[in-house]
Image (cartoon, rainbow, N blue to C red; front, side, top):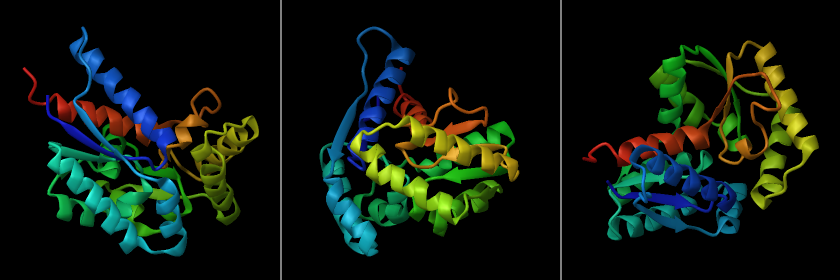
Length: 233
């Protein structure tokens, strides 16, 4: 089993999901007492959020690159960045660490391709919804049309992530709001909706909406398991 490095803590709430999902996946594949061969470098999200809010992506990149280098030095052979938003600086992290990156947008795009989805909605942080680093990768590599919520919806989606989900605060009213946003995206032609923030699946599930959902946390974790076990014998 290959050793996977997880760059997490953004937020720790979703990183905990990654840990469980990856270990569950390895156990399901190998059985017995098997568990995942992981290294976890969990950062202080308050500092990351401060850099995000200030638009100081270079500082965030330098810090996360150092963390990824620590994972490489510890024996990691591959890297999962356990957040969609910080894939904005993924290229710099990979260049500095030399680790093979399991890119979350690529894992998601492969699912879209497998399902024949041509037009997809995206719910995420404002950074991920409004900037091009994530959407354009899906467009360029997988040929999909990406649509996002309107301005007011985007602000509320973003606020719920940072002010509730990253704090482990799960509210029924917010779940209903997210379901309404997913429905709006569907009415605008989305064949499915990407949960493009690793915390959103804590709130929005198929139990509360009929709109097909693609939870990037789950997709990313599944891809990680496949990568880890690709040379297992």
